[in-house]
Image (cartoon, rainbow, N blue to C red; front, side, top):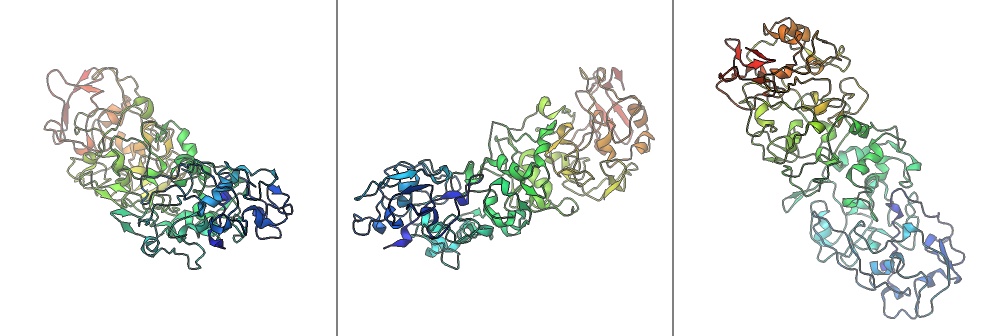
Amino acid sequence: MKLGSLVLVLAATTLGFSQTPPPTTGDVLGSHDLSMSGTSHIQGAMSAACLYCHVPHSGSGKSALWGQTLSSQIYSTYVSNTAQNTTTQPPLGQDSSLCLSCHDGTVAVGQVTPYGPYIMHGSLPPIATMGSQLQGSHPFSLQLPLKDGPSLVASLAANGTTADQTGAVKLIKGNIECSSCHNPHIQSTDKLSPNFLVLDNRKGAICLACHDPNPRTVNGHDNPLAMWSIGIHAMSGTLVNPAANLGGYSSVADFGCQSCHVSHNAGGSGLLRNSNETDCAVCHSGGVNLSPAAPNVFAEFAKQGVHPFTTSTGSHTPGESVLLNQNRHATCADCHDSHAADHVPSFPLPPTIRLSQQGINGISAADGVTVLKPAVNQYENCLRCHGTSTGKTTNPAVFGYLPVWVVNSLDPLNVIPQFSLTSTSSHPVTHDRTSPFPQPSLRANMLNLDGVTPGRAIGTRILCTDCHNSDDNREFGGTGPNGPHGSQYWHLLERRYEFSQAAVPGGAVTNLFPNPDLSVSGPYSMCGKCHDLTQVVSNTSFSGHANHINDGFSCSACHTGHGMGGISGAITGERMVNFDAGIVAQNGTTPITYNRSKNTCTLTCHNTPH
């Protein structure tokens, strides 16, 4: 008999949040023993367990002397825009078709020919019924010959062998079939996941028999698993609560691939247990699933300022362009590579990307289009959306008030020219600090969120997340997660920063803040992280600072937050002096001007001509 072709696709190994099959007692067949003495959910009156699948002398020419009536069901199988191999309908009477004769649910168990049907009692549990919609199940019965892919071990297509040195995980007639991963005759090879696996699957051993966790490039495509071995999900000893019903392993590392993926009946694309964000939320939204609990990232998304990942006008796909043109969305996978991401034990100096974003792609600041795989600097990942990409939007109800700068580029939402080395002045994000002018207000260290304790030393660069960050982030003394997930302040700003606003340009400012509050709770707190506001109101760098601030104007009336996005003959632009055209207007017919060397400007603001 060709026992190697017998297989039962019991998906309990990777069907997350579901019941565990009954334990094996006695016969190694376990729940495949359908006899009256067996432990299965469904039983018959026959005493010989083999006869529920095999008819030794009347197999009708089917492989493995198969007796159960085969299903004629047409299946919808796995599809992906990144898959190198396509699925076909499983050949009737071969390998996977034998398993599906019971487990697609269209043929009653015990419909054995020529001696049946047998009278059976009980029913298969939902976990063991696959149905015909197999889009959420691992691809099998592939179109041959197998094609190589960047995430596959090279030997799979080259010579039909897996990377499993024991030989337990194997191709069946050169193909991936149910019996590549399952042995229907032995339930508990994996004692902690007794689901007829051919191998102990701790740390994703079965998955890694076919999927390569090392760097590979095939047909111009890079391996998304290239940094798996050094990522937190492969190494974390964090315990998984058994109440989460993921299975029998104990830690995130032991669950391996199964922490996020399932082989059968997956709820999301890419065999994810759930949709992209929901999959991440299982562990990263507080709760009791992990011990100790991971930082509650998803609590940040309930705040006023938030990366709006729930938009319905575009969705993340693994095959999408790195530069996100006309597909505005912000999913976890846009900023984090779940296979590569690692814990951040300490914070390296800017502009280096943090370990939590290790392996993620980016866009070069040099031209705004060159793809970087992976991004080396944090800002390069931000430029996927905040650089030359098209389809960017402004919506005050979602993002907050946005100034309209008198001097800007054609695309005011493209931050590349604003931070460019050719910009008249800018915050030093994409290049080192180069200002030739004294900066008496600049602190030696950034202040932590309490506004008192010194944080990281101010060097020649800053990060995007030094301003755009969770308002309770851990890096600057809070207890929450780091990064621009959500903030109580608009524009995902880490601290309070008020924008002066007026009903009409040049008219009265409608939200003055007189008698200035220079504390960490005040309207200039974001600037006060790096700049000593007592120096500013002492006019150490500009003689008019005190008058403007005491009258209640915000920094935003005269200073751009990123840098000069363009060049103007009328506004010299040093010290990031630009003007919000929603606040100021021309002084009569004279264009709006600013000249640093003469320390003069020409404009109308708050109904006052200057």
